[in-house]
Image 1 (cartoon, rainbow, N blue to C red):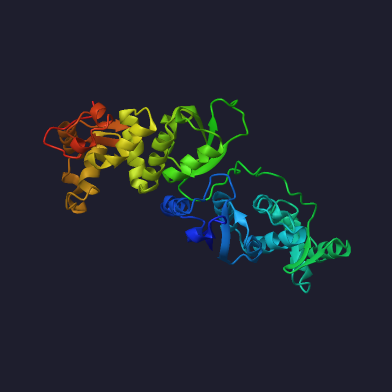
Image 2: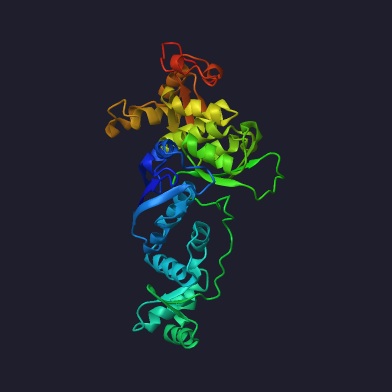
Length: 397
């Protein structure tokens, strides 16, 4: 969405680095390395000089030939990336009216510009009135409210109030909007940017549990992103990290296991990435594996995710008969013929198959483990050996 050419203002002879914003997770560490080679890209300092900037956001042109902080521009770009056309106008009009130039103010504006009304077309007052009503009511209203609203009268009252300001993006009415300092120049407000991610807060154990000195970031993230986020909170010792989760996309069984304040942040990050790659079926299988194996940490769940192929799973199955029916009808191992339905002995086949597997029934279905290691050994991290099943079943008992 945004591409910036950055340089070291004290040493232009070092050259430049071209950085995309928002920075894709898989490119983040590389981008930081590019800037470090120029001796810029500090966690908190605004030390990157903007030589060129390309974006669809005209208001950002005011950042040209100024110094910016890498993570501030990345955070702002993520916020703007979610805006629709109306929010685009609201953001630009208010930035224009208030003559905002600092990154701190621009970030804070993204959280409140939705309250203002921008009029570009005075010919459709009904639409203007409805839009204004929604802007001043948190962006929502029930059907009856809108049905009974006189949009034209609402618009005329707004216009006749004479509080509009002409900007390049239309006439803007601030509706009492206040630029609250949600971003204090150090800690970014919680913002869930990507799907299939979890929003975690990092704080120091030296701080009280209700501290506001929290750095928020979305996992999965690159290792460098996590390290820089911790440094923003002044955390230098990983044993000093307290973790809390605001939003997450984990299966309930995963979330129930995690001891969040005491988890290793890098294990939690790996787990988030691993779970985000699972199909819906494998998410359910993982839940059953957790039920059967009782892991105790994010690291152990990661090992189980890595070895899901060593488990077979029949979702929803709770009896030998249901398991036999699943194997014959749904597993794909047999050419099921519905005309022979009365000749199938599902319970007998289910029991025979279970006897060979030493599997278990869980709340989510039937589960069998086919690895060569015992489950305790598997969760100790002997991954290479665990990947080679043999004829001896490890079993779940």
